[in-house]
Length: 285
Ligand SMILES: Nc1ncnc2c1ncn2[C@@H]1O[C@H](COP(=O)(O)OP(=O)(O)OP(=O)(O)O)[C@@H](O)[C@H]1O
Ligand SMILES: [Mg+2]
Image 1 (tube, rainbow, N blue to C red):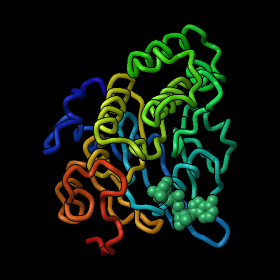
Image 2: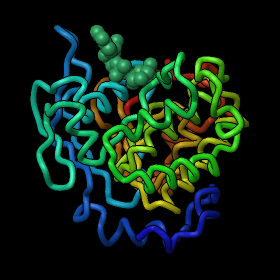
Image 3: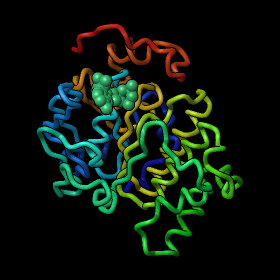
Image 4: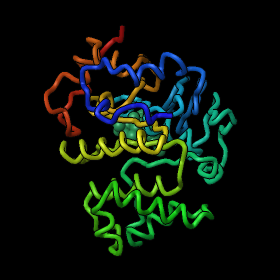
């Protein structure tokens, strides 16, 4: 379903990429793989997200952009069942998965790559990958997917027998993404893959993320502070501020918006977390 879209597409910063948008025009709202409706989640008295509604179309990459503390991680944790929302609903493949058990949600085909990777440091790289596939019974499929992740990230093949805790941050991110892939998910939730990585490594990881989407047809929901990378990789974007969605559009159009240019894309080489200025207050229009 996504095979029609050429991979170069993702690297075109200027928008105007017709095949990507054709999908959105026709089916963005109708063919939602994931749908959040008025979701509200809190930590004790702290309301982290306040009535978030969003959709992820099947076969696409969607992104939620937001600064520190905006509620990005909370959205993903609520989707994958790690925290239960106070209000609202989460629907995956037309099925209500609100507040369901995380293991059940993984079995439905939804994998979560958490913030800060969280690989098992004392297990080998290979065993980490196999942990991702623990619910699967199709041994041939698991072996095939292992080969495929090694093709995406050759360094993981080289380090397959080594403890995952010895990998660099970037390699651990590769492993975390690969472990999610080993569950053969239909949807991957990806929490700030650029966190702590160099601009070069961030670019490399985003290129693979786009390939995973194009080649496997895996749908992705990516949350990021790195708007530059996320808006180039994704099809549809949401801007989150203080737990609320304040803007939504195709990424091609978001890249052209003055507010986005000014506050999210304004700095050159905004690839390293911490270089960007998120502190400014802004009213979205
Ligand atoms: N375990 C927790 N207990 C209390 N408050 C929390 C907890 N986790 C997050 N929060 C608060 O909820 C709000 C949203 O946090 P969240 O982690 O979702 O933001 P984020 O957008 O992922 O930020 P970052 O970019 O820094 O990862 C913040 O105000 C944060 O302080
Ligand atoms: Mg976070």
